[in-house]
Image (cartoon, rainbow, N blue to C red):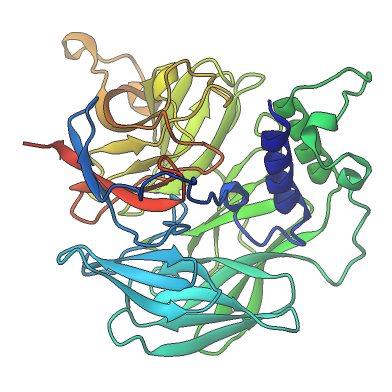
Length: 448
């Protein structure tokens, strides 16, 4: 690994581990910003991928633009607009006219688009270290203030009817223990094992994540009423809380994670914000050592939680589903090259997509730098003969994959974060394949 790459990755990890309450989603630490390469032409506006036959178009105009994290909604309810971040604010791409228009100006952080009103929510820093959550109408550009946040606190999600925001914070009513990570070098390449041996970058990073977890810093999940500003605590723990996601359809259902080394934590949890005192429900229980589950998301109808499952880590790969109402489970198998940093589902649930990964990532895929379209295929009972109690067992299946975009020129320190457009005809992603960060979309159907 070159010194430059090591320094960039160390900086990203430092952002992840030192943000006071980890107010931002963990993956935002991977939003590496790359500049245009000297002497290279502007990124093409449209082309047919010669390896896959699929059409790719560039949606953004300004270098340094980005689309949202894979599980955040960026679309207005009518399916017309997609919100993207730009170096100087927020713009919307009109999916019908293919015109990009600015909506918010200034240095702000795009959060998400409301599923009910279609308003664009974002966070604006204030000079005293606090922040404002504001909402902008994508057509009129009218802006309203939604909430004021304490210093070091961020918002991660909004519920289906846009009545509640939710975030995580360090507790202020109890002493905060020393962070064990402070005793470690900030560059994972410099971290040593417990026996003093040299560790790889990936191992050093795991040691640092584990040190943050073992600090047992008291944290809380809170909600803010968007009408009254009332703040309520939903859950408190010394687990490292993160990755909040409200259900897209149930206003009271909230998913969160226990952050840390995935093979150590029970990561996936559900809780209710409308039933004070209700115990969180664990979504996945480990059955073997080094089994990992994470990068979870809700299906568009809110009925299923999907997630990356590996049994064990780096060896056998699945996209697993948990049916919220019944607890029924589905495991869809895929091969090593098709493993992706993030997966996603189409609005109708019939298709999956993956953004691939480089050879240094957990799958160590020899040919994984592609965007993928995935078709789920269940494994039926032979001749219709059912095993006793089969209805309570995991439903197995396979994801048949098709390559969409060659990502050989992409640096995966910027995670592509694929998501389907509302009509499922395109998959939006971000990439630095032509030098600077831009937002692109690939057509699901092959070009004629």
